Amino acid sequence: MMTTIKVLTKINAPIQTVFDLSRNVDAHQKSADFTKETAIDGITSGLINYNETVTWRGKHFGVYLNHKSRVTAMILYDYFVDEMEEGKFKSFRHEHLFNEEDGITIMKDKLYYEVPYGFFGKLFDLLFLKNHLINFIIERNKTLKALSENEKQ
Image (cartoon, rainbow, N blue to C red; front, side, top):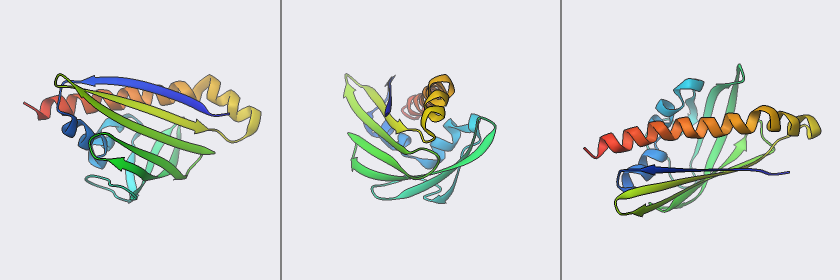
């Protein structure tokens, strides 16, 4: 069964600034500092583009995990999608959508994933994983919002 997470973040900055910071590996590392997430392979600095990969190593639930993603779709300043190629999920797709209204960028994160391990995976998702991922995205977006809004000054 697929789990879906949707998070909407309003940012007082131009869409191009927000879009580029959202795909900036260095900005992601800053925004995911609380999980000690670092890029260890593929694109490890700067902007990631269509069909490029990045492998992240971060500490989740007390354990260091690797997660390799590829950008599988991108239309500049509208959206991009990253999908897991290697990692602990059965499947993992993160859609990043951007829209600008009256100088405010509305960033939507849509996360779709499946967990392995049958019943026990589903139970872990229900009890811990889904909330962990929601909080991860919210914390990440707080940093992206701050970086974007500071950049425009």
